[in-house]
Amino acid sequence: MDAAFTAEQDEMRRTLREILGKRCGPDEVKAAVRTAAGHDRELWQRLAHQLGLPGIAVAEEYGGVGCTPADLALACEETGRALLPSPLLATAALAVPLVTALGTAAQRSGLLPALAAGGLTAALAVPGPALSTALALTGDNTPGEWAGGGRAGGVQARPGEGGGWRLYGEAAQVLDGHSASLLLVAAHTGGFARSRTLLFLVREDAPGLARSRQATLDETRPQARVQLRDTPAELLGSDADNATGEPVLDALAATGRTAAAVLACEAVGAAGQALARTVEYVRQREQFGRPIGSFQAVKHRLADLYVHVQAARSAAYYAAWDPRQGGLALAQALEALRITAGEAIQLHGGIGFTWEHDAHLYFKRAAADELLFGPVHRLRAHAAHRSGLFTTPHEKVAV
Image (cartoon, rainbow, N blue to C red; front, side, top):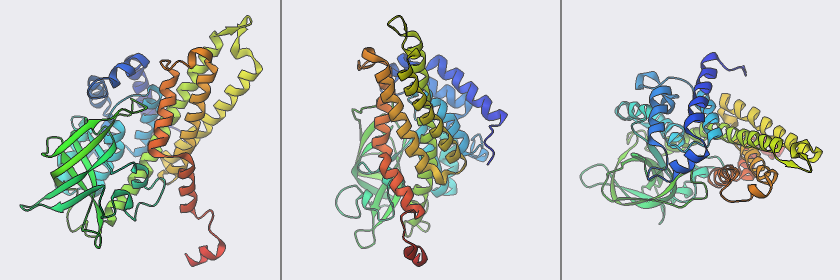
């Protein structure tokens, strides 16, 4: 593994940090999340046109930059530093890989150029609070129970009378689901005996589609409830390729591994910035005639936080290079962000405990991400299970 960054990667990070430093301060973040879209549309278009951010990992033949998911992960470290509210995660890290892996040639050529240009945003709609399971981060996604299991609940799909498909049901906690132009909906079809999970494309203006933005702990991660009432949909891929439903589950798991590496880098960026802001504060805040950062106890706490952040950064960079380690890297990054954000509030003293203080933006991001993609102990447990860490020698021989 070559851990050194290329000149192009360094330039991309520098440019992105410069743009976000000017346009994405705490006040701008708070203003952007209160808009109808939940993000600054003008800034999103600038990032798309100037840096090609949503198309970093899209092949050049589809209008993308043609880089790797590792480049997207490194870019997300910078967006995490600024807590940028944007459709980047839902579109580039979740939707684009699924369209690339499962879409027909016509679907890829019709969707990927618009997604790469930023004019089209997408969201992955998974029934219930099961996004981490669907992506195989905290459990095996093959049983399909997370999507309804063919029984009542979740989202169900049936062939339409005049061709196509019809969906009914609902999905909650859909990232950027209220503003996305395109929804990728996971739904069950085939009844209980021949149940399989498929992905369907639903346009924002489809009849029977109702979306409502939900109140969330972290406003920089907008979520929506999506309801489908006999809504027309297009199957992602072909009927022949989705005969068993296994390609969909495999693609979701592969997307989960890459998304975990992206999220790990994003969490590391947020943790590093929370630590930097705390260090700056303790250098200025005085108590008993001296900066509180000069006290030995404060130095020890900051040193511990630095070790947490650097260890998480190392794990996140490794996962960007090898996405198979994404689950463990995400667990370490989320833990580092939670600890750092909590300590940041403590070390800011009385002012840090006020709900309006900027330190709470990082604390909310830490709590919300662990609720969506964790918890940490389940991420680690599933990674241990997949690696056979707790498998007995007899079981290993049997496997």
